[in-house]
Image (cartoon, rainbow, N blue to C red; front, side, top):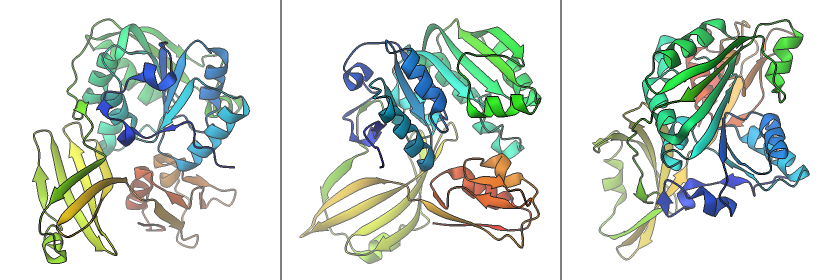
Length: 349
């Protein structure tokens, strides 16, 4: 059974940021988990605190399925899930001073220099947290990487918006994640940081106001030849850059678009164009899944793929990389393929 009643699709809402009291049917404190994994942690929080509302961000389809089954089992009413990058989702979907707490449990540390803008230590993400958290609201960050913990600690300590209340090694919590238990059972060190907001920051939202994501209706002369000319074209808005990567034709037309904002958040999506007699409808569609495959003969078991994208790849007992999600829309799968030293990983859209 696939449960979908807990998933929230932002493109279906008329305005941004969202009115969470309308979504949950009440006004309550809001807690967010960034990267909820199998949903175990979020489920337990929602069960223990029925007086609060919980929102989880994740990109893994498998995680969505597993988490929603848990919610359904306990008949939870106070939790919703959103399948977008949390850097984007926190900024665009939550009003200022609307979130009580943000949990970030054992995220990918993104050790490479070219990926550092994806870490919690990036300036743009810190600005988002300083805006959407309520005064004295907290960020709780857990990791098993000491260098990452030190970097996050330095970032919060040097910020005018936060003070660090807790920095603890080998911490204990009432609610634990699967990775938490795993690392502790192996004797591996874990680190916890709790930072509290003491000053409000300002963040510039790209979608504030009326929702223009869903669709657009227009009249004009649209031809296949004209659309093909758009391939590779770059369009610039005030705060965003759009690139038309590919145009497809079936009964309708389909445009594959990549957009990047000032904070480096990149999104792939499709625009479906259909119409007749000069009247056209342009509809926003989410990015398609990618098919992932590993050539076992070429794999040398370096572990790069598991480090970059643990939801999709895992080293097996034979030392070879295994694919956990043969179909995924996680961007890190492409990063893993690009970083594989032997080219053993292939990703097909």
